[in-house]
Length: 320
Image (cartoon, rainbow, N blue to C red; front, side):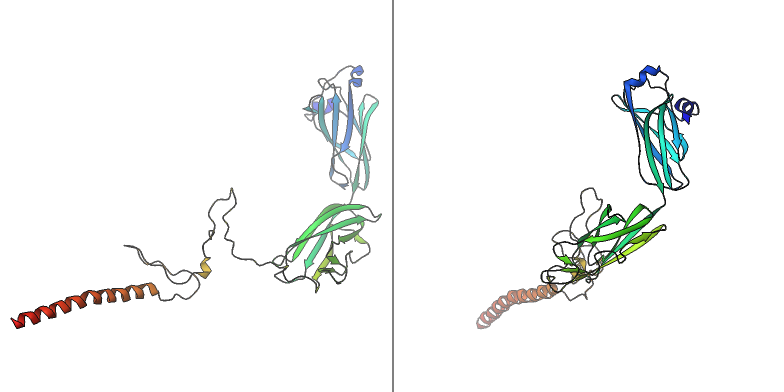
């Protein structure tokens, strides 16, 4: 049992002494922050005092089934409310009980369960090819008594056909993982069914978690009734970056992606010719050929009248 005043003396918490009659001017509650707690770890209990918190008495803390590891100060968190923390450890499975006392009076009690904990990894695979549409699949984890102890979602698509979701801090024991089937998903293909999950429940009726990690696998396959339109292609992203993202888009809206550009760039006045662009063989530009063609036609159109006028003039001079 560690008096709060003693804790203050060693720098863990600050407390104040008041007459015992002040004990009726406030209420005390205690609860663990997280439960269960891994064996060998520290359980953190929150001590909450409501009422007259300007001057608080010296509390004592007593631990049953564990070890008192430390006490943090009671600090105001709101009007007439103060909160602090008490740290408790235990090296074996079982329950540690924390009592908050004022003198010999027990003001509040809280318990934390210590257990061996592991992680359950659930792997979901969509066996539908690279053009499969993105989907979200929902799952539940049940304890041996049938109580739902966890829910989660896994996402898959053609470019990410597998997804692994981890559920940490589960006490050792037996569990069942089951997929929640939607309107278009069943355990076998039938009319109107798009996806099939051969085993909507984990392969074992009950899965034992007896080490740091255990794994469960689900495979989802398309049915013949799956519409061909439920597919996704991954084009070149031509959208500008979202707000707050530095830089510019590789391809701006309305522009052709570089892989589809043909030909070569033309050098400007005094500038060297830049390299070819695109991944297609450069083709000879027809703009230059057309320019030369019209230049020749224009030149001929100008020379013909001049030649004709010269011939007429020569003829007239000969007659004279």
